[in-house]
Image (tube, rainbow, N blue to C red; front, top):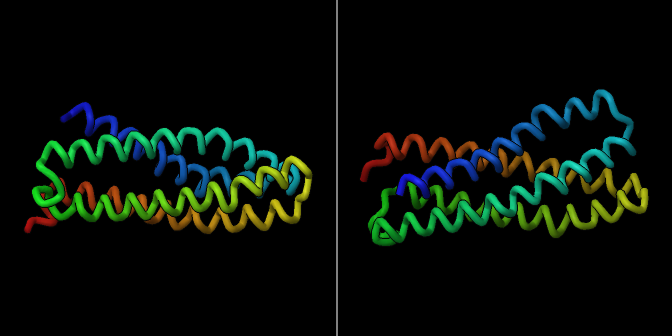
Length: 154
């Protein structure tokens, strides 16, 4: 069980920590020092690398999470914080998939064709949804820590 918890936690840290770094550190720094075309190329490169990690992280989070629920005897036998974590995690996954397919795929095509205006508009939409997912991720981690400490006892 501890191995699955460790893998689960590391995958969460990669996803949520990556969003925090990108949103709170990289984004403002890129705005300060890069002109729009270079900034959009940077984000295209960053997203390509980060999203590959996120796909893997989501897979590991879901597999380890569902397996640990199974080990506890199913959803009827886990504590309330696990229900909340699962719900928030699934919402985050849906938001991520929406970002990837609805905005990132066209974004990268616009960058490749140097359509800066269109790419910039899509980047703004991605930024807002990353802020949403970052918030949900931080809430989920908080729920996990409080739940493990017994804060959601039935």
